[in-house]
Image 1 (cartoon, rainbow, N blue to C red):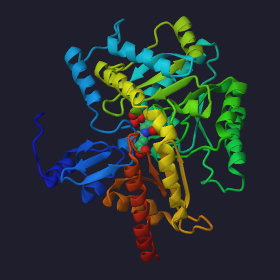
Image 2: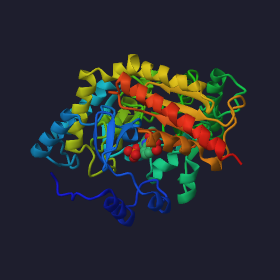
Image 3: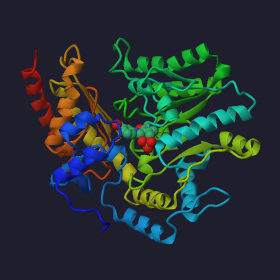
Image 4: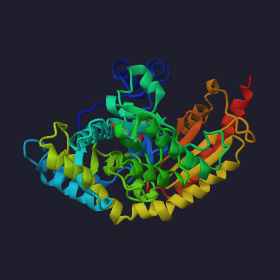
Length: 460
Ligand code: PXG
């Protein structure tokens, strides 16, 4: 084993506080609370340094789709590390893993996709998209088409361009974002609306906010629209069925490119290879990451449709863009093994027809809880909305942090769920058993019961 010393939890926590800057973290708060030190994992369970096991209802960060402890992936990485641990794909070089993975991915995707550009993460994938979209329109002799339309509360990553595409206001405020040429429109979040329209009407209306923005900016200035098939980090926002068909119509009508951000939905999360397949859209770009390797190694990329790739290749000459780790051989080998594993164990069909519907039915039972305003799930991606008043669906005062209260109890009771404001979300591994699904939902209910007592007691 590698030379990482054995230390006590305390020692790890002290070292962590002293030296480690975490992503998306308030360090003063963390220093007080201390980090959970995760030491190992197996199946759908993680284990901390004290040996406490917790069911990982979030697949790490929406990525460990095949579950932990998969020898197939470990073996693929080890073999590739021995054979060729690194070489680049620059300067007219390539290697078998990057080539094989590129070919494999295009077979999984819709027929318009025959090319892939590799990156190291979802953020890098989306930066790549921004550059390719604008380059495409330049080469088409329409350099005015610069604007990319995205949605409020979208998450597309944390680099400067990806955070700009995202619609997270607190992120924008901290760094003078977004960069020029990005516009944000309504998200298809029916529960978060005034609910005066039916979900079906609301879906069309949310899509039409894109059309209104196109008219406002001028169609000759609009390059593309980007959206997650189901918004993940924004709180598992499942669009009404009417939404994506209308988005596709609008993109077609105004001739703008459609980007389906598949970083979470890709590789089976919705019970199909890609979210675009589920909703029937025909995207021009599909950025992906996370589930492509089940998170075992970092890898991202962009599937590029022929109508774009042909222009970039035929008219573009050299495209000045790439990363040291574009198509990293070990990450690519793990991705190939992971895709094989998803196929061999029929895990995506399992999400669609078996564990997905089972967990959804169990999750739906939470809807009767006094704290729950709505329970929803698609594939293996779910949310419950915490409300103070079940009849009016009024939220708790923000300062009460009701979502955090529920989440913290849930983790204490042995299941990791996430809080996005007062929305509690889950996205467990595809290998979740029925018994583990029961644990997840029973623990969520227990946490809701305990949270209710706590929130009532603390009532002003
Ligand atoms: N697109 C989408 C749809 C994502 O969910 C990214 C792009 C960026 O990927 P990278 O690999 O650069 O992180 C993501 C990432 C959360 C959370 O709190 C979600 C993500 C990342 C970190 C936290 O739900 N999604």
